[in-house]
Length: 228
Image 1: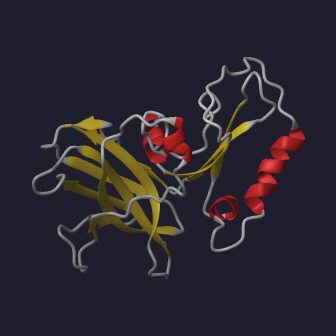
Image 2 (image 1 turned 60 degrees about the vertical axis):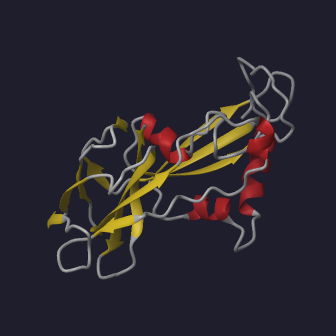
């Protein structure tokens, strides 16, 4: 963002937050806050930046001043389910404006490795184990288009990034489901394909959980697989 003068959850390579998190080795759910420039001017980065605390505080106050229902950054900061946060900072060499990325992570379990790229005929072995007090709820499969390069003006025209909803959800035995998920205590496992007539795209595998005694499901893990 600092090098190209934009603010967006998409990258210049067309990547999205969960894709970048997956490619960095992440297995949980990542949700992102970002703030930078909007002028689309390419710049070199300051190799030894000194960040003005007042400007950083200004960015945080901007997030926290949001008013519902348009308060996604604020809710991200306050969400009690986030266990981890990673902060990225960069600054152009010629502008006293810090650029900020906040990556919030929900760490509710351990998950078996999935391929980051696969053929359309792949069978995915989705398994893992959730930690108390979260109980297993389901496994989701979604698809978005393959990434394509984006210019700074295109990126500055983007808005809120919403995690794609699953096209298919798989539940444990006893629920209506295309295929039942095997559940043993806190452990779960399922072998699934990419669906009839799989297409090229970024497939998103999500794990859903619920609090003990509650029926509402929420996402606890999201990973991407590039299929060409």
